[in-house]
Image 1 (tube, rainbow, N blue to C red):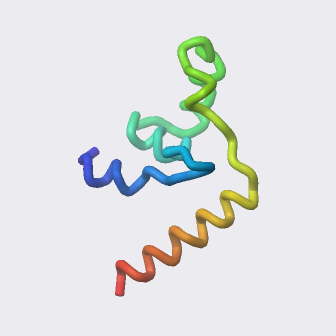
Image 2 (image 1 turned 135 degrees about the horizontal axis):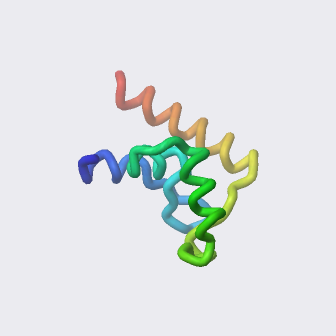
Length: 75
C-alpha cells in the first residue's frame, strides 16, 4: 500500500492518531475478524496504549466527516 493511501486512513480520535481495524486488516491483507482474533490470541504483543474502542457516537461522527470530505474531493 502506498504511503499516500496510508495517510488517508489515519484519523484523529480523542486527540490520538488512529487506524481502524478494517483498514489495518487491509494493510496486512487479511480479513478484519482474523486480525482481531490474532490480536486477542497474542494480546501480550500489543501495547494497550495503542488500542482502544470508539463509541457508536464517535464512529457515526467520523463516518459523517469522511462522507462529507469524500463528497468535497469528488466534486
